[in-house]
Image (cartoon, rainbow, N blue to C red; front, side, top):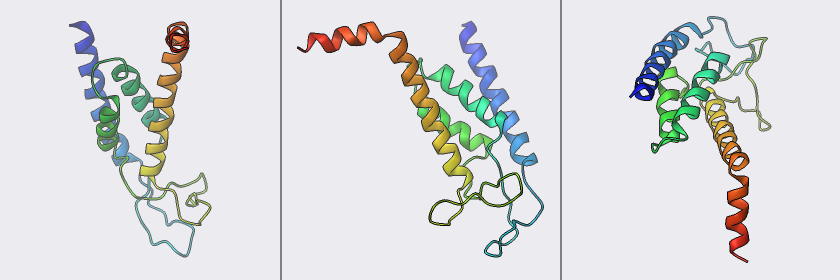
Length: 138
């Protein structure tokens, strides 16, 4: 009962903070590239990363979809945008092909990394059981 209240509270905080961060994290200056018009842009902030990490940490070990919750959290935080990620100087971060990385690509990559971390934690915790199961196949 107590865990359910904590999870509900964390999700409500994530929604409220995400709406605030989404509204506050836009830049009003022009992107320093002749190929881009003035557009709203966004960064994946430390607060976004913290919220996504908490959601992953809570939902990974529950019998619910942690990936689904990350997708919902990305939406609530406004991270499903195809706007370019900017560096500290306000320039778009470009890929090898010269196209800018988007906030959505950054959020998706981060989700993959934190889910990989959760899998690594399970392997570290249960390595003896996993090794025993692998040895049983010999």
